[in-house]
Amino acid sequence: LVVAAGGDGTVRMVASELAGTDTLMSIIPAGTGNLLARNVGIPLADPASAMIAILTGQDRKGDVGWLRVGSSLAEAQSARRQVFLVIAGFGADAEMIRNTGEEMKKRIGWIAYVFGGVKSILGRSIDIVVYLPDGSRYPHKARTVLLGNVGKLPGGITLMPDAAIDNGRLEVLVAGWRGAAGFSQVVTQIVNPNLAPRRRLSRGPRLSTLHAYHTTSIRVATIKPQMVQLDGDTDVEATHLIAEVDPGVLHLRVPVSTDPTRD
Image 1 (cartoon, rainbow, N blue to C red):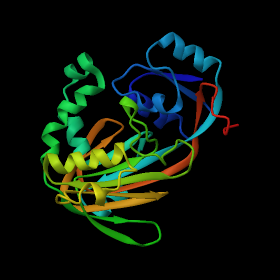
Image 2 (image 1 turned 30 degrees about the vertical axis):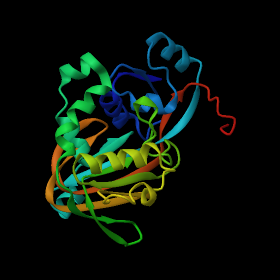
Image 3 (image 1 turned 90 degrees about the horizontal axis):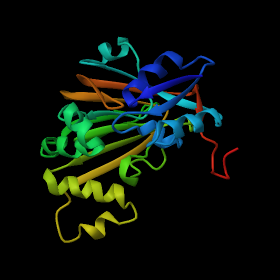
């Protein structure tokens, strides 16, 4: 059993070595967001409680995502694969992470990302095209593309309700908005998906779009380079992104489930 003590970036690097092996992996959360630990039920506040939960827990197979990026399709296809376990992003969310200082994260935790995101909210949407494995293509105006292997965020927010660590697919959100008002529409739709957008916006302009895909692999292309992040680590700027899920290749030790539907 290998225990990664740190944040999601540390966990990602450990998982990149253990994926595809028979070695068990678990986590003592010690980062800003601790999103993977949050999604698999590991206690967040106390390392001793986390260790007890790990040692008395159960084994579970988890999916990993692999990402390749480049400034052209050919470059992305030949690029080294990088692992992500939580969410990879392309656009505004990666800009938000880049704009968030390490000192602020240490002082106030995940809320620091809220302040870091102010600059990203005001940017313009760009033209992107989403390509799915069946050969279909979908053009969008988007500020960000999120590739989710799990979907729960801090603050009790579920960004991607259909993203799970062991369902063999990625949930992809493509979001576009104009200004702060458009961004607030996206947030409202995520936090309260049962609120009908047409009724909510009947007295005002539609300033946002939100599209979801569920897929085993995806390719995203644009003309203007966008910042890329993997599990909270900003990588490079790119115009082409290729992602795929690798089902059940990570052996996880997690707390005993309280979900009666899970064996």
